Length: 260
Ligand code: DAK
Image (tube, rainbow, N blue to C red; front, side, top):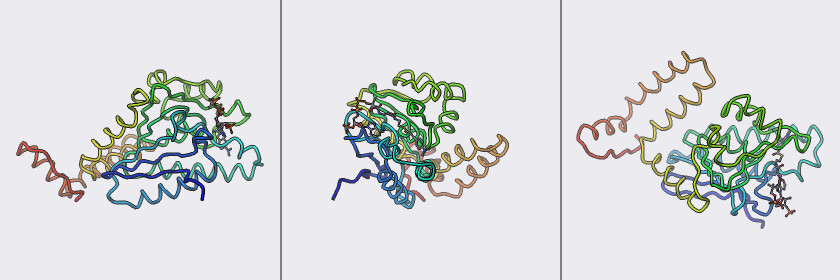
């Protein structure tokens, strides 16, 4: 049997998804997308989930794009199916109810950049390279790049990156707001897992509600987003964890959240 193309590991509520095709720089073919879909569906149904880390196997790439060899055989119908599959999987990853963190450990191009953009937070190694190089192939981004990159870094910067296909190093990626922080490659996963463990120790319902309010609010007028915040804020007062969190503050002790 061939190796799984998506590895799933879990530790204390933090799941790590590793795209595992290092011989092709973790390029996303249909097999990877189907396996990723399955992994994300399983995570979505896990009430003990607190955070997710996404990374790439091998020392060289996060994901170097959609699989060009597979796409080279496509006509328009197969391309539409492939793009729809990619969009569905990345939307499911984005919609996970907990924070999803990309640990970008090398090339992060095309579909790889689109995968990272489906994550709430992006951290990178000092070796990372970002880009949407599809126009080099006579293509355009097909897994949401024209939409999510523009929302993350602004329409003009996204347009420049997509039109020119130029690669962006990690320090520039921070400057344009694509990446939050850069770490030496050897430290990246450790630092990201520390961050995920920190999030996992907070009130689970509060973190989930925060993610929901940010995500829904971004797609809505400000007044609608603010109304949603009032509702989600108020609902938290029904949880034992909010009682515990506030009581622990008053009693000057650490809070012990039970996801209740
Ligand atoms: N697809 C397939 N194989 C890939 C690949 C990719 N995207 N990227 C790398 N590989 C493979 C290489 O072919 C090579 O395989 P072997 O020759 O060893 O069998 C192996 O990975 C190692 O790569 P290199 O030998 O090229 O490594 P280098 O260090 O020399 O170069 C590189 C690294 C990342 C600069 C280079 O590999 C490269 O330029 N890769 C392609 C990057 C790229 O153009 N990415 C964007 C792909 S297009 C759509 C749906 C989706 C999309 C568009 C439309 N619709 C359905 C409408 C999305 C498109 C993309 O993502």
